[in-house]
Picture 1: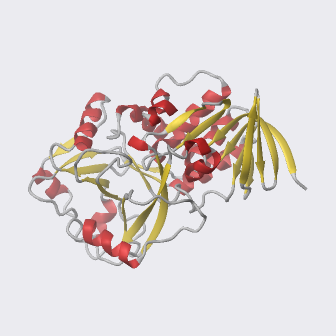
Picture 2 (picture 1 turned 120 degrees about the horizontal axis):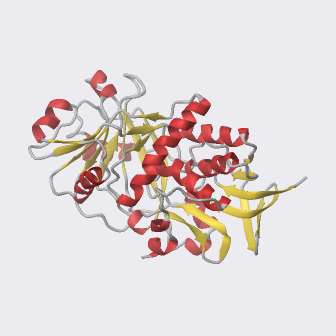
Picture 3 (picture 1 turned 180 degrees about the vertical axis):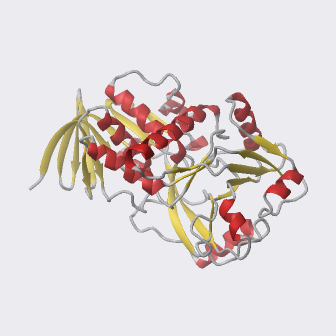
Length: 390
C-alpha cells in the first residue's frame, strides 16, 4: 500500500547538508519529511570516509568563513545533545611555496577575521613537522583550531536529533519525480506520494537527476581516498595536524586546489594515514556501486604525491574508498530557490569543500524555510544560482 503524507517541508537527500536541514527544521517545531534512497550515513555519495577537514581561514573565499565558524559551534552543541564526538581540533597546516594564491588568501583571511595562526618559516616547518619532506623554500601556515569532523557520525547524530524532534524519515525510498504549484509541492517516490508547503533538494551527486535544468551547471567527479601504511614515526603521525599541501597555481574551472591533503593516523599503527587529491578529467554518474582505487590508481597516487613528500609512509594502501564531488564552475555552492518554483530550494554542489560548512548551511536554510530572521553573520547571497552561472 502506497503512502500519502503531508508536512511543512520535505527534504530530499539526507547526507551532510540534508541531515542538517532536517534536524534544524524539526528543532524549530516544523513538520518535516526526510527522504533518502539509501540509509544514511552511506558510502554511495559524498558524506563518508571517516574524516573531513575543517579549517577556519578558508582559502576558497571570505564568504565561507562565517559558515565554518558557525558550524564549529553547532557541532559542539550537537555533541552535548547526543554524547557523540564529532569535531577534533588537532590543528591544521598548509604547506606551500611563497606566492601561491590559495596560501596567501588563507593567510589574509586569518588576519581579516582574527583567526589564531602562525606563519612558519622553512626552518620552523622542518623542525616542528619532520614527517614532511620539503624543499628549501616551502613554508607553512599553521592554524591551531583547524582539525577534522567525523562525517558519518555527524550525519547519524543530526538524523537522530531530527527524529527526536518529530521528523519523519523515510529511508530506502528513491524519489521518482516532484511537482510544484502555488503554495504546494508533491514528491513521488517508489513507495508513496508526499505533499508539503516547501521542498528542499539536497541530493548531492543526484542533483542532475532531480533538477534537469542544472545539467549544464553541475558536474560529478569520482575521487579516491587512500590510507597508506605507516613504516616509521607512528606517534608523530598520530599527533600531527591535518594538512593541505598546496602546489600553487591559479584556480580555474572546477579545480579549487592544486595539491593533496591528509589526516593524522587516527586508526592506530596498522590503520594507515588517509591521503587524497582531486581529479577532474572525467565526469561520472552516481550508481550505488562505489569502485575503490585500482592498483594502477593507487600506485600513481603514491608515485606522484606521497613518495617524495611523506617518506614515513609506504606504498600499497591499506584500503581505498571512492567519493563523489558534485561541482560547479569556480567551485561555488548553490543555495537558492528554484528559478521557476518559489517553494523549491536547491541546496547542493559542495564542490569538494563543503562538509566543513554543512551544519551552518542547514541552520541557515531552515531559517529561510521557516520564514524567521536569519543569523546576521550568515549571508547566502554569494551562493545564488546567478553566481554559479557566471
